[in-house]
Image 1 (cartoon, rainbow, N blue to C red):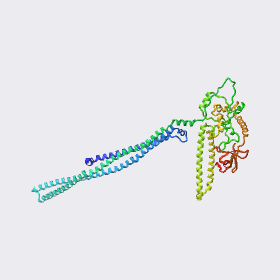
Image 2 (cartoon, rainbow, N blue to C red):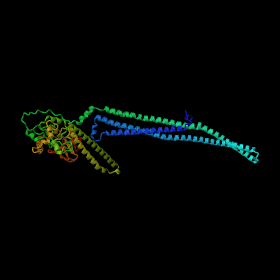
Image 3 (cartoon, helix red, strand yellow):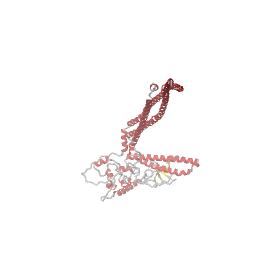
Image 4 (tube, one colour):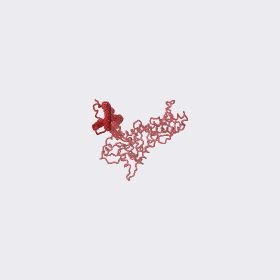
Length: 606
């Protein structure tokens, strides 16, 4: 089957058909192009959707994604982001492998088609020219034959007429001969053109047109094959991303399977656990007895009027010093001034007036950390540095977070110090690169920052150890014993302002409480003054000058040698003595300690 033999006379129809084929190809290109735009828009919408529901940084939502269900949702968002990326891949591949390639092929196809039909029209023009020449020679031959017949008839007529002169007859004879010669010449031309036309016509219909139409047929078949390949590529590009899309969906399924309700429940416990014990039983109130005025939980002066109650020191043994005595070990470094909240919450308060059951139950159900009375009055409810306003468990988490942050900052500063040290070494080896002395100030500044951060970290680690039970509790435990979330003293926490208000509306209790605390401190000071001084267990040398401005600390001068009477227990402080009357705590990092049991090998804390 060949268009050259089967469709030899369908030149115009073939021209229309091939143009239709190109239009179909351009329509398919347009279809793929619109598909790529849809894929891009779909991917963009998926990415926007994923971004919309992503947790915002440094927000409450970010903390919520600790739960496995939220993590699964976050994984779904991330997988949808990858899913959108695969649709972008589809769009890019279809654009590069189909749209661009077919657009270039269409241009080539148009040029090839134009060339073939140009050759066809040229062959048509050639055969038409031959036909016109044939028709012209034929008409000339026919005209010359008629002229020759008329000239012959005129000669015969003149020859038969006796009245015509001989010259006229001879003229008519010569004219007839001339016409016959012209007719013979026209006949020869007509025969020649006829043969030429027949040859050209045979070449046209049996050689030129079949060849041209065969090339057009091959061009059209290649176009059809190219469309088929493009359709196949269209499907393959979709199929290529199916495994990755399947992995995205598998990731979503895996995230869904990772949801652990028990773990989420445990996270809720960790997030909101206060660490306090539930309230105890409510005592029976006998209204048959005469009414007696009860004292406030924070009123130490009233409680002393009823007899000195049994004092508790937050679980400390008798060997531990009372927090208000000068011999007391200060908080972890750097020593800070005593918190106002530590004054009214030392010893455990006596019993207080009972509240109705409904009030007590509501207070327990809405257990939020309460701020102590004096702290709320003196500091306006500001969060203390040791997070003592939080429940124990929440306080432990905050302290641990603070310790981790400080350790990261210390590591960062140490890395900076190492970098400066290396740079200084380079300057020492290559003085032309820089002055090593120019880095001394920066190095000293970084070292000072590291020391400050270490002291800060030791302070928070001590508070953390106190909460976790590694160290004896100080004022915080006393505060908790004095009434925070204590069933015996809850009314005093809620109504401290009212308890302190005198009948005329003025606050009068704070002064009496502070004076009472001073009296208690004096009593306990007398008790502990009778203790025997601790023996020295070694010596130490001060590496730096330390100004002991807080209670329980002692000032030392760089290079000074003193006695060690209590080594560091892990809280960053060492207890030393200058003479029998001067002793106290200094930061362990400020001294170099030599214990008697190992005098040769010095144990150094730096």
